[in-house]
Length: 448
Image (cartoon, rainbow, N blue to C red; front, side, top):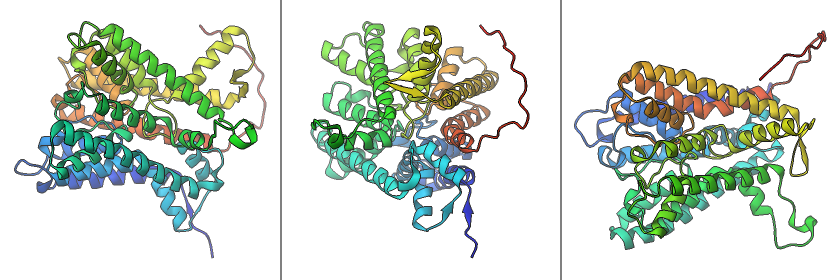
């Protein structure tokens, strides 16, 4: 009996487009919205894409426009998108006993960051367990805080806690409040819980797995294991970006959006606002009121994004680290790129360069399209919107609801490209490299 082979490219495209189509239909139903009649198809498509791509950009207010049914549809799309549709598809394929081609296994490895695919079934089970565990813990803390802070009835507290815990861990940025979570900017518990959920979701499941298995209290390396290079790279660059985001926001916004706040509240909100641009989308400060230097810093953080195998987007922290390490090696005159006592394969540097170049190219083209359709809108607002959509962040300077239908379609394409491109790149990486039959003479080219 011939074994049916499954192509990962079809799984990726089919899963995302299928989920978006289903979400669009459900959100277009009359009972999905509070207002009479059905939601316009373009707006439903926009919302479904934003949810499944865990972006958070919205053309309507989630809390007041949608019924509980519509909000639950959005929540389900966020959860599926956060886990990674391909990871879920792989999980079901493994359960069904279907066989994947070798190139498909490479694609799955690249998308979830696993080096050895032999334990894919256990890996996916772990991903589901970690996701549910972290989201449940966050929801419990938020539940008690919502009761104490907002004096919600128990059912409403449970609902809001679950929705925002899932949205935060999945780095989605969707909120049931019209002001995101600015109303809680003085509550250290709520703001901290949101920040921790965002950071955990942005680290990547394999990094969380490695940290969980690393017994730091053991003296023997055989007993405690070791932190993999992937973990060291992700943790180090994440810490650097968090510090830069925190100090940059604190310094640049001290007398602006942070003005009038107590020092403790300034520190708390600077830390949170320095965390969320890396694909979270929540805000405790009004983005449109921030200074240009702060917005430029946020665009830089958005472009880098989260880490491979995480719920976030962007070019990824490890990609940025490879580019930086490569530049440093060239400046120092070193032949190989080295990090933490390890030599980085040249293929990895080539992949990072490719991702960087393609991402910049997409942002340029999509920004051009939005500049044409959104006449009269400031250049900075448009670039910020495109960077936010491409990196699946969800922060906005307030232009999203006013986009034309063509503008909305451009942002929809931007969100989808930003979410799928890393998976597509994994497919390209997974393909077998063909050696040329004839070796051509080598000749140098001047650059710079």
